[in-house]
Length: 247
Image (cartoon, rainbow, N blue to C red; front, side, top):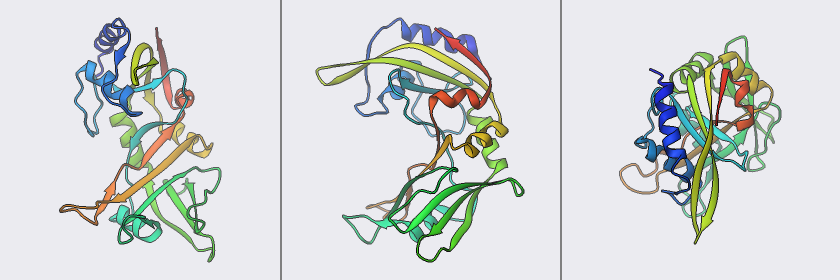
């Protein structure tokens, strides 16, 4: 259940702390640090993070892509193995193992390994979002990988029905990053139709990140780093019915 008063109270508490040392040294430090101060355990749960809100953070000066959620395609069965083995490339350190890393949009084909073109296609009749893969040499097209509208709507409603999006100023001292969480935005009621429109307009990117476990009991099995649906923060307003600015 959404508790706006609680998350605003906690945001203001963290804001009043001023600059906070990052709890992680890489790009994900901004989100990790804010969630630590909220008391959120790091997780891959499908439910929202805190008080009914999914929590996302960004550095004020950047407009890099934001991951809305990760979701493997609905079809075919064992889809990660299928995509990796059919279209992936060998690791330079172990040619017995493969990986598939590529980013795709709906308004243009990309070029992957100079062998394949990937593109997102919206099948409105059958209500599917398809990964369309074209073999550059043979011109064969593979339309077998897709998400159903229903599965994508479940992700939106369960994980992103209410989004708390935080902006932070940053500074570096002695090689360590610090964050001052200064303002936020609340987004409520995402729409599947708006989500589909963002895909159609080339404003939503799908990142495929499938690798292979290199050791241990899972050696050789697919390691799904998360097939992410990603958007520029400046386009978030186009996904939701309501937006509230928090200063």
